[in-house]
Every structure is written in structure tokens, then in C-alpha cells.
Amino acid sequence: MEATKRGGLALHWLMLIGFVVGLGGGLLVNMTVGADAPWLVWLTSNITGPAGQIFLRLLFMLVIPLLFSALVVGVAEMGDLKSLGRAGIKTLVLTIVVSGIAVLIGLGMVNLFRPGDGVDPALAQSLLAQGREGAAAIVEKAPESIQMGQFFLDLIPSNVFTAAADNQILPVMIFALFFGIGLVMAKSPATDRLQTVIEGILEVTMKLINMVIKLAPYAIACLMFNLAALFGWDLLVRLAAFVGVAVGAMAIHMFVVYPLVVWGLGGMSPLKFFRGVREPMVVAFSTASSNAALPVSLKAADDQLGLPRKIARFVLTVGATANQNGTALFEGVTVLFLAQFFQIELSITQQVVVMLVCILGGIGTAGVPAGSLPVVAMILVMVGVPAEGIGLILGVDRFLDMCRTTLNVTGDLVLATVVSRGETDADVPAGLEEPTAPAT
Image (cartoon, rainbow, N blue to C red; front, side, top):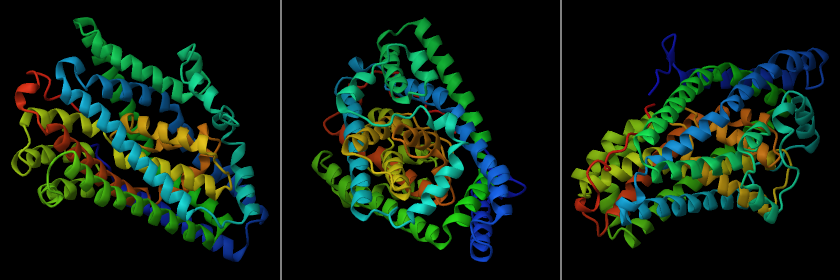
């Protein structure tokens, strides 16, 4: 993982400091001078507001190259699905199905408990008006409404470059998905070189994302100051409700869905499974990195779970990038929470769109700290929720990142257990068992 320290403090501690400073300063101003003080309006309009918007725009600048390269590489690393036979097909199908279940749980929890409700509509509209000009270039391309028939038609871009220029992210992701499949099917020295180039684009983009994320402490301080100065103590209540719903949804997926999948499809006792994966879960929680936990996961699959070595290596290395149930769940919860916070009702059709993009986003999410933020921001724009609202959750993102990474890593081991059932090492051709996961 990239070094995340500056001046002796880890980046997540600096983000926490920025969160506390911004929140504390905003609450103090809210209680003493109120949200309408002329100097406060000038400060938020000319200093803290633009500073937070610069951070968001830097994230958006990198969305297209990040998602395209990550999705292409993620699909290409699946290997030759025809040669892999049952193992490859089961990996692909289970990745989509289990991620879909995760997103459904998250969306269901947010719709049931509605953690974003209760904010004064006038204050919410005031915040939207404050940030609308700064985010205009980002949000202006968002569709005003989504119709199911037109949605599926628009998935296929007539011109992928026009789609990218118009910030139509989902058609670009569909093109990347097809491009990755084509890269697998048209295997040759030339396509190998092309894949290397795309992997290089992914590495450069992830490096830039790392650089942008280092600005997060300052952006968090500015964004939280604006939010707290306007919303006061209501902000803390909504934030606590958001964390509670997100963690609750992850717990349901971890302790209900995973045991059922392991027992029903993998033929293994859930107790045996969880005893065997304790160490990878601890490493994942402490590092918040799927790739950092990969060596420990490989060892646990071999020593504790007794899975066929080649199949486990194939599934786990691909899963470290492409099978991210926790990330998909988190993205869905965050988008709906912010929609509720700003009193924007998303239709069932829009929520289906959110689910589909979250599943694809789980494959195309960078393995860097806060790597899901560009995907969350992109989905917000797609469904017409103000992108500047992402500042609301940045301060608690580190803890949720640790939780969702634990869910991701455990999900990889669940997938390996299910795919390994009835398979042997002989089912995987030599050279296909260890695709290389992107370094973080």
C-alpha cells in the first residue's frame, strides 16, 4: 500500500483531525453567530466552499481513466474463461450474484430506517444553493429522470468518446466490460502488450488518486465546516444514523448471507469456515486493504480451509480486485443516505440503476485508501444527488473502509470455498492460477 504518512501521522489520523477541526469549528459558528452572518457567507463562498470543490473535481477528473482501466484489467485477469471451464464461470456468476445481494441488503436497510431523514428542508436547500455553482460543471450532465426502456438503450454508447465527454459513466463502463472480454478472447502477443499498457494506465491513475487523497484532510475540514455551520447538531445525529445503518447492513451480509452461501453452495460448516478465516479478517480490518490481506488469505485457504491450491489462488487474486461485496454495499447505502439527506426521492427505477452501477463499481474500484469515493461521486451525479454531499461522509469513511474491506476479504474466501467444491487443481490450466492483482 502507498505510504500514507505525513509529518509522522498516518493519513487516516490526519483525516480524523480534519473532520474534528471542521466539525468543531462549524458547530461553534452555528451556535454563536448563526448560519446567516455576512462574514460566514463570504468565507464559505470564497474559501472553504471552493477548497472542498477542488478536491471533488480532482476526483471526477480521474473517474473515466480509473474505471475504464480498472474494469478492463479486472475482466482480463479472469483469464481464459473457456479454458477455465466451470471454475471461471462460477467465479464470474457468483461475483455478480453475491454482490447484488449485498447491494439489495444495503438499499433495503436505508429504505427501512431512512437515516438521512429529519433535516430541515430549508437548510438542505440552502446548502444545495451554496454548492450548486461550484458543482455545476459536474452535475449538469446528470439525467433529470430515468425510464427503464431508455436506460437499457442508453447503456450501449453509439460513440464511447462522446459518452465520456458528456460524463455518461455507465455506458463507458459497459464498453470497458466488453473491451475486457474482447481482450480475453483475442489472446495474442499484441493484446498482451495492449493489456500491459492498460495496466500502466491503471497504475498511473491509482498513483494520482493516492496524491489526491492526500488532500483529503484539508478538504474534509472545509466541507465539514460548511456542513456543520449550516446544520449544527442535526448533522451529528444523521451521521451516526448513517454509520449505524451501513455497519448493520454489512453485519447482515457477513453473518447471515455468507454462512448460508458457504453451507448451501460450498458444503462447508460456517463455524469451520469462520475459524479458518479469522486471521485474514483481522489483517483486512487493520489495514483496510484487500491486497494487503491477500497473502494471509492464500495461506488460510491452503492451511485452514484445505481448498485446491490453484483454484484458490485464481479466485482470491481475482477477488482482491473484482469481488468487492462490501464496497458495492457501502456505495449503495451512501448514495441513498445522501438522497434522503437532501430530500431527493429516488424512484425504484433509479434505485435499480444504483444497484447495477454498484455491482459494476465493485469490479472497477481502485485498491487504494478511499478508492470507492470516485465511484460514489459518479453515482450521485447519475441519479441527480448533489456531488458535494460526499463531504458529509468523508470523516467517518476510514472506519467504514475497515469494515467493508473485512467484508470484501471474507467474501473472496467464501467465493473460493464455493468455486472449489467439486473441483481439483487439474481443472485449472498451468499459468492461469495466479493472475496479478494491482498493487496498492
